[in-house]
Length: 234
Image 1 (cartoon, rainbow, N blue to C red):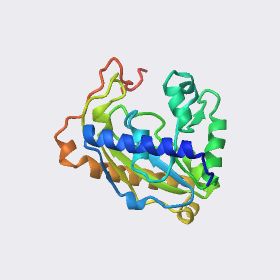
Image 2: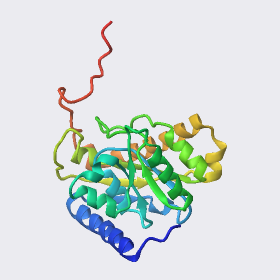
Image 3: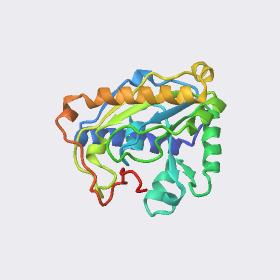
Image 4: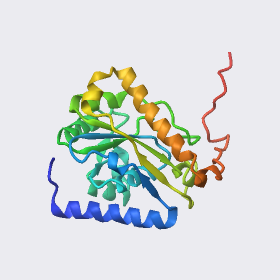
């Protein structure tokens, strides 16, 4: 694993603990399954995507340093750009094919680091887990990384994607049983995607049954903003 400068390590740990402290107070954040996080080796963390809260929320519950991916244009934004650069985030240029970001992700995995990705490709519109895109499979196979499925619940209630600012709520994160490299190597792409998606959906359903969420109605996207689900007109 690459050793980062002392100041970089201190800054990351300070932010991690600050996020845990503040969100535990304001959002009653709860983490479960942390014993499932591999203590060493490359780990590809694969999670459902509910809101902008997800990356720091998932990273804050992990003692190992997390690597994050961020859209390249975010690095140019005042304040936010400085923050994500200070965390050594990986820039991804979606319009340019994201090749450079994928190469850097693979390099960090081969250095035995952890990388967080959201294979749904975008934040959810309804709070449910969407179909996973298979791109993460190549990263896991080529780096011999373990795949750690993670489920998050409550972030959609607190900050749905059409809402400009977050509101208070409850946040729960579960780190599931990982698929170790030998298991990843035995499965073909389709089977591996299906298994990872099955686990994330199962863990998410378990979190959603918590009374803290059962009594909260799911936010509904305004029809003028949500993507249409109507069949095309012939």
